[in-house]
Image (cartoon, rainbow, N blue to C red; front, side, top):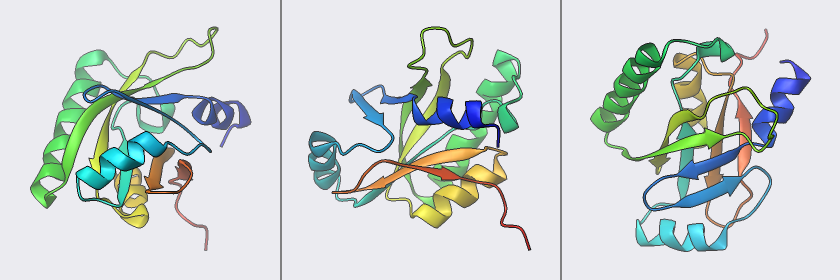
Length: 141
């Protein structure tokens, strides 16, 4: 993966809209952890279906893809909250990508979901841990 793109992912603010949370890679978020405990989950993922492999799509295509991802996750039984990836770089040309905070998802399932939706990476975490950027590329054989 391009190092500039990887750096951009690491410097993005992963914002949940309601309730409002702003999560950063490599950081702990104790207030968010306490909220997760009230939701009776230990793990979470932040996943989008926008812009597969970082190829910008039209707004209606991205919206359709995110709706389909949301339906897929709800059918499996996950609770999801809308959010967005916000660039922390004032010179960035990337528009915010609408995403889903997925409660209770295991790391391997978050990565597999990202892979199915042609994402380069997903964000994942667990109570007490650091927010992690997880690459979705298939392992080479």
